[in-house]
Amino acid sequence: LLIHGMADDNVLFTNSTRLIDTLVNRNIRFDLMTYPGAKHGISGPAPQRHVFGTIEAFFRKNIGTPSP
Image (cartoon, rainbow, N blue to C red; front, side):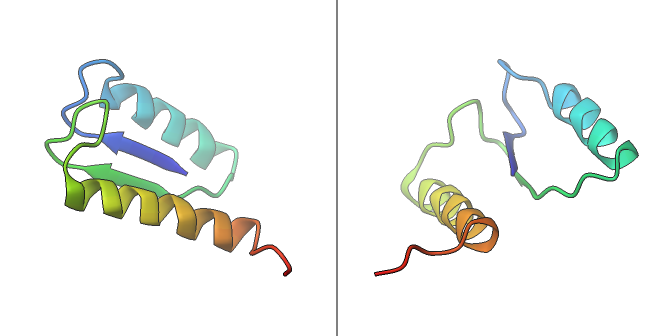
């Protein structure tokens, strides 16, 4: 799972595009979520709910849910 704020001035989006290019060239599947206007930390109630929901869904899809 790759999550990137498009206005991040700490980790530039070009770094993510290089990683994406490498993953594609190695035929490694990945999920990508970008947040326009977001910096290095995703802030604000709605974006934070969305990013944490995205992370939770990724784990459920790839790891599953624990048995009771």
